[in-house]
Structure formats: C-alpha cells, structure tokens
Length: 290
Image 1: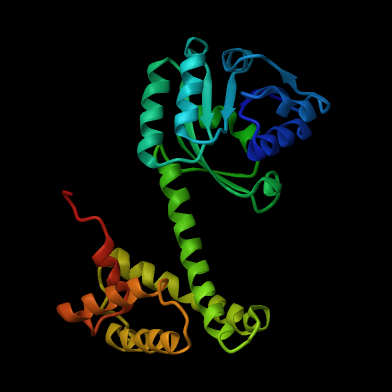
Image 2: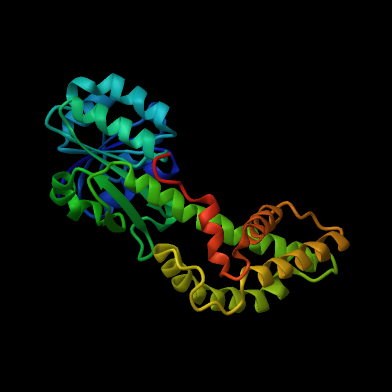
C-alpha cells in the first residue's frame, strides 16, 4: 500500500481515485469544488482543504485537471509543499507544456513525471488501460507498482514531453482511422445503405489493411519508398481521385479526403509517382534544422 494524493476529481480523476482505493492504497483527495469528493469519502478517501495539504500528505501526488493552465494554478497554490515530493501530472497537454511544467516543478524541488492516459475513465484498471509516462526515471521506478494499478505503465524516457508526444501521435492515428470510416459510411449512406450493415465488409477490410503498416513504417525509417512497391503512388492517386469524383457525384462532402489527394498529387508531380504512398510522409515530416 502507498500513500497517494489525487488533485482533480473530474471523471478521470474519480476513476483514478476509485482504482487506488480498490487496490488498498491510502488516498488523500482535493478538488476545487469539494462536493466531488463525497462519493470517495464513503470508500475510504480522506479529503483536505487545499492542494498544498494534499501534496504534503503523500510522497506521490497524481494531478489530473482540465488543462495546463489549471495545473499551473494548482502549482501556484501548492509550491511550498513540493520539495522532496513526487508529482505525476496526467493532465492532457502538449510536449512543450509538459517540458515547461517539468522545469518548473523540478525547480521547486520535486520529482516530476508527465503522463498520457490512453483510456477512458471506465477502462482504468482494466486489461486495455495504458498510461504513458516520461520524466524522472527514479520517480517512475519508485512508484511503478502503484502506477501499474491504474493500467499498463509504459515509461518512455527522461524527456518529460515524450508521454504527451506519444499520446497525441496515437490519437492522431485514431482520428485518421475514424475519418476513413466516416467518409466510407457517408458514401454508402448516399444510397441508403446503413453504416452497421456496411461495416460487416469494412471492418475486416480495414483490419487486413493494418497489415500494410509495418512495411510503411520500415520505408519511413529507411527513406526507401521505392522498395518493394506493389501499387505505386501514381496509381493510388488515380484511385483516390476516382473515390472523390464518385463522392461528389453522390452529393457527399469530400472534406476529409481532399487533403490526402492534394499530397498524393504534389508528391507525384515532383517525380515520385513510381514510389509507394508512404512517400507522402516526406511532405509532412519535420525537416532537420527547422
């Protein structure tokens, strides 16, 4: 059992707190509006009146608030309690915000871990819950057992921004998948075909296409987009053009896929039409020195 404090009792904070209590940890909680602590008190949590008191009560404090502006305000209130403590910030934000927060918190004498929660509140503690961490390796090692009670704990490195970077990158892959699903569903919907019925075909197809991604990853890492090409970029551009032409003919909006066709055409016109579609990565990647 560990002494743990939770700052922030929104939906995710409630889930984190509940899981810690279920695992037998001694829990201290604080929220800007105290009424949110009531359900947790009945389960054995102890409420304090300030974030400063919460941090002082435990060796490790988990913060999960609305955004980094809110987390900065909490640190303003509780700065004097931080020396010698560990702060685990599971607030959603950007890599730059995480690095700035790490600099501030460590400057106040505390160890800092930033985190990215790859789960919804009901998933916390379940087999599919994943939380990414970056920052102090010593702090992660010291509190890993408690953190693993929330879900699989993946430590990514000492750069505090890495958890946020991976979090947002994983979500971007998710949103790209969703975009394809929404466009495909709108296309068949134009002929009165229900999305549920169509998914019986689409789901297995998308699962099969996931098998292509390791090969694309290898080409991205090597820069060899001309290796083992089965269907080149020029052919793929023509196919996507047909999709968008049919989309317009069906009276469906093309907003989700237009940007991809623009990239296909730009890469093709630059003389790379013989390569694989993974080559469009070169148009969006960060260039060295910039």
